[in-house]
Image (cartoon, rainbow, N blue to C red):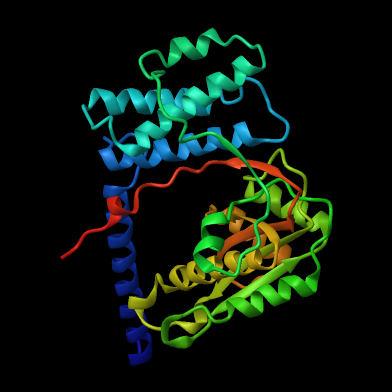
Length: 317
């Protein structure tokens, strides 16, 4: 016979399962998933993803001619074709950005005296004149005590300088970030600072999004301890508080002249398990994101990373 505590636990698990199923169903109905008809918003999102991948390739220190021919570009062509077939608005800023990226890809190969007829044939009808809002820009670190200027000048850096980043400077950045707001001031964050190069290599191999770049001097992992939260209504709070802290930390690193790039930790259960085992992280800690850090080079190329006009995302009631 089940006692009262056992029955209460069973009911809690049922409610948790119901909430989980409802969350997943909402995600399934709205997110871009294979085999499902895509909305304009779905296609805008995936086109933005593809075009940023191309920009990263264009900005790479070691340029690989015809990169993405059978992968990213092939997928982008299919998605742009579907967008046009559905009759969606081609004056959307994200679509204009995609056209600009395609032009930059072609122009970069022309500058290298490389003919890529397959590209012109694939994207015929999309390669029309467009202001260069996408592509690559060369930057240097700009010191600023003004937050708006610091935010505007912050870029994700993947090609780091040769100078090491000290543990003390990273600790200072974390200290600055502790003013991040959190639900009921619970401050559930944890920061793993990985300095062992072999361990960094193993973690980046699991992460999979830093291939082709030199191993960074230091690697951070942000986690949030789910033990700080209570009730099913707070089930998503680890990601909210973790995201807020991550952005604070990125700005703090920038202010201390430390170059950084956030690398996602949206893993399958197997990859999550591998990370937990490597760093001896308990099951209650939610993985939020990795941050690769290093010194700023004298100058470096980065994607232009187009931004929508802020007015596009505002709704006034």
